[in-house]
Length: 262
Ligand code: PGA
Image 1 (cartoon, rainbow, N blue to C red):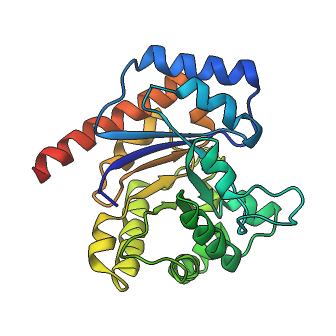
Image 2: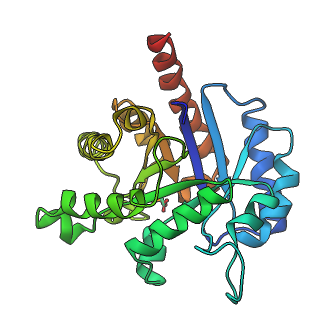
Image 3: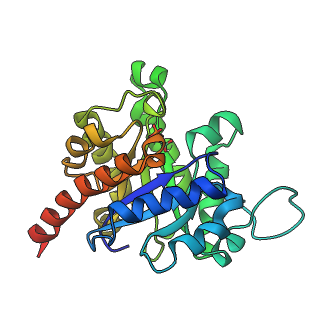
């Protein structure tokens, strides 16, 4: 995957037809054109994917889903195939979000199979990994992150698959307490070196996003870290002022990075 900067909005189970339109309109008013340095992906609740495809058409904003089945089709009542999401205009799907691990009992193995099904359907999986507060406090952060990452990468062909990884410490999601920039850098660096053991070129290009209570007031200090390639934003993605401010903070850093690489 080409190295790029990414801002992903995870709308979770929020929104309705009118609110989704108001939110996209609000983003477009504040940001009439997207930067070529930062890709924006919005992940609405599943029933609204088709509506959102119309709302973002021609804007450069891309669409993702919050979950997909590990199967492509079949007798799986209530599930959604990644192929269906692709047909509806999604290019991305969040895999292994901690809320799904906590409330739906999703396992590392299921996450790996979902990542593969997404890739086979032409979607880019956004693979979420993250430790609990208890795991961090007992010094097991790297053991947990390594296990989660290996479970997904066991299914991925690094030479030609496009993926994004998101580091989302569970204790930072929805709590208002983001990880410090130093913690974020340390864990992103750990994740990148873990992937580099499989494929160093792939690891160097791999976008690693941070998620967990990121907002306009703390985004810059996190995005400034060298191994951070963007953000996965929950509650602040529902507020157009906040989301656009975060986007602009990332854009400044992404442009600097692009110049440095030129
Ligand atoms: P938050 O959520 O920004 O509300 O902490 C992030 C996420 O769950 O992806």
